[in-house]
Image 1: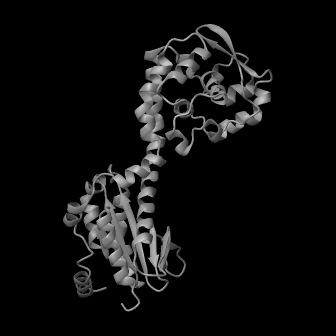
Image 2 (image 1 turned 180 degrees about the horizontal axis):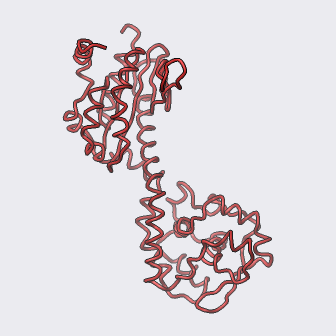
Length: 359
């Protein structure tokens, strides 16, 4: 591909290709309200962070037995199911482990009760629902949008709380129960604010390493899904397909004859012409945009050679901190827009202009 062709192509597409400076002028930088609303529905991580201190306060109170703790939870402004979600995360006791308890319950607790030590004395909790209903995220109301609604404490949640607090300090220790419930020892810290606070803060540092990646993936997926839906709703050509995670004909990894077709965030096509769209919205800086920048030139050349187009939706303060990568992407793209409805409208115009049959 000669420099002359590049310059001509640049002149043709000057209305769609943003420079880094032009892109920064129209960028949102931080999550637009449309995405914030979606993120609030799908991600519980900010909610957990906001309610962490309430959770710690409840466990710090000095009560005489589990029933006293249940009373405090039920009277607290912190929803019972959200309190339980904190326990599930801190004990790293997810859906599979809950299922394992349900299926092995009669072997683990043949008397239907759990004996445990609290404040130097032995106590007993009689299970109220187990094993008649299985422990799972749905029954415990700790999954998805259920966490956004406050639920009063019920008996199956009480059973789960007893297990998660005292399962690891079960006084009638058997080999199977010891291995299954070994992480469930938070009851050791009840009523001990300083020790409890240190323990939970340390655990949340570990938990954050897991949840931050999940959150990033969730937010990235939300941005991609938003772009997909916007194009579907606003493109003014009939018969257009908008395919998440699609591929371009004849654009492969490695040898064109033997390589695997390259996947892109979104493909827009009329089955004759194809546009690949890559979406990146990063509020905090990371290396993803560097990878996209490193691929930009070779991808652009492969896509040009195959007769297709590539566009980018780029935004977020973190991305703009990596100015070198963004400048490279802006140079090697056919259309570059920021993340807002007005900018996505430009992306739709670009797609319409290219995909029209008479072009």
